[in-house]
Amino acid sequence: MRGGTLDLASIRTKARLLGHGTIQHEGVEYLHIKGFRVRLQTPDNDLENDAIREAVKRKHGEYNLPVMRLEHLLALMLLSGTRDDRAVFTSAAAATRFDAKRMKALLREHELADRWVTWQGPPL
Image 1: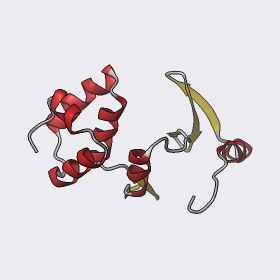
Image 2: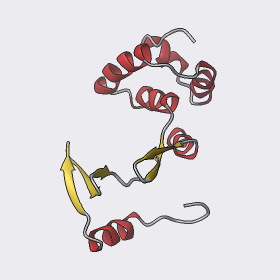
Image 3: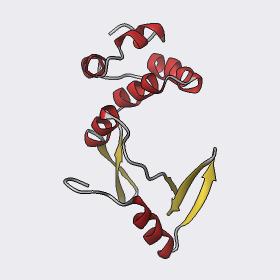
Image 4: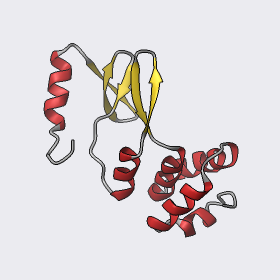
């Protein structure tokens, strides 16, 4: 929400009142809305804010859903630094096409270029 505070608790409450249930997956609670697992959370850092702001709309059935760009997802994996993210990063970075110019800019802006090299990201 621009220019204000978003109260996630009230959104969860409203969703439950509308009949949407919750499910647990890997220790995290999700709303279950029309077959989708939805996790409500606020961005923790500038990279997450950028990823949300620059998400692209993709049509799924009757819905236009915001989808994070691959470059942001790769950068978020680098930022988190977990073993699981490293495994996914390695295969995703090698097997998918991404915008190298956008990736370089993200790495520079969020100081992740060294980790890109350490995690053996493909040449940019």
